[in-house]
Image 1 (cartoon, one colour):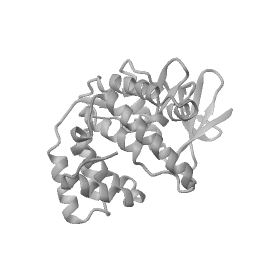
Image 2 (cartoon, one colour; image 1 turned 135 degrees about the vertical axis):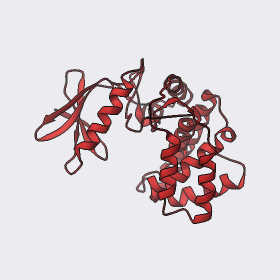
Image 3 (cartoon, helix red, strand yellow; image 1 turned 30 degrees about the horizontal axis):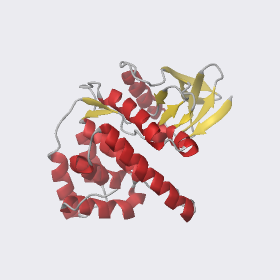
Image 4 (tube, helix red, strand yellow; image 1 turned 90 degrees about the vertical axis):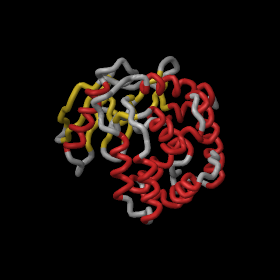
Length: 262
């Protein structure tokens, strides 16, 4: 088997039959596979551009999941290689609209997850946490299918069609929640610390342009997403506390009503 990728918990190998196997790295519990399998089965109920999952297997003493191969390259790589930022964001937005158009009443409530993460945050001081929780409690309910980790690295493009991968954060809620999280992940999530400064500045410009193009395609404004962005950033302080320097000033600005700029 040829290794074609690796994440935090697993390695991905090409089975050379149109399928891949995602094998857990040593030390990670099988529970993670069971949860991912459940998400894959849930997604399989919908007519969406997502790889089919064929269940759990064991290879070389390691357990994993077999999926259809998502051919091509990530939209991030395609965008950087070709410069087709607006075109790639149109492709990504079209796929996202298709996902958000699915009703998923039985899924986990994203608002409960946002509240749980915010409550357990050790970075938010009491007053800031209280205000963030008030914002979360005022958020509307929704039953749209939410991907939860939708960004250009999780959208594959083979030159003809897109395929969306990494469905482990599946939830239900208002579409604005997923859109706001995508904007944050695209534009404001932490860059690798070893990235050279010149490359960092250039990539940040590309990220801002891409996020603006995506938001335009989705027909939303930063102001419309403000409460969801506030909730997502507050939860992020527990999810990825290493981003403290970026998160806390933005949360304070959002809660103070200051103008949002990309």
